[in-house]
Length: 248
Image 1 (cartoon, rainbow, N blue to C red):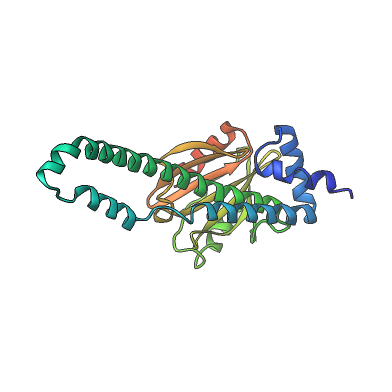
Image 2: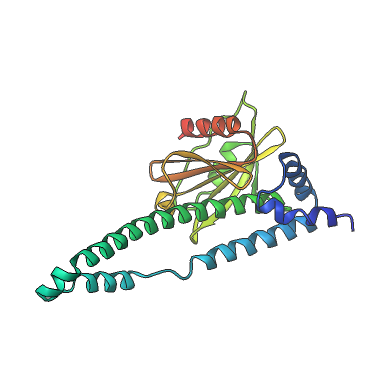
């Protein structure tokens, strides 16, 4: 079939194993082909389910508390003198391991959150109806969100800039509603996600990161968390981020 060559590349696309040229070509195809777009969305959702399952089983607080209690249990003087160096070593290893585990867990949590937003961006690219409110007018798009999300935000004036507002839709993170705004710069589509900051506490502070083949710029302002995601160049993402920050 005509689409076989494209669907064979979907797994490599999702895992960021394609070249930049192949990624751009597949992005264009996903926008135009509903069948491949649906298959891409299915595989993205399957990837998210696998990621969620990876974090299901982990040592709980009760287990760590039980180990700490056993280590701290009082012993006879002879036991203390004989085994104190061993217990001290075990305790040191335990606390170092706990510290490393906490850092790794934080890193995995950061990666999972960004991966989830990147997945939503890819799903938008693959969708035949990427936005619910279609307008290049910020005074039309912003009021549309009133009553649909529990906060408000400002949109920048894009006149005399290379950016075009396409529209927006309601997005969800941890079952909480937020905004996904779609912008275009040349042939690239950029998603701007806005959520309440309490839903994104796992994310790092103001930073620029890369997940899969997409650039991610994130910052917080007045209780809101912003994520700018796209396959455009870092300069394009940074410039759009500054426009949005200035409007805020």
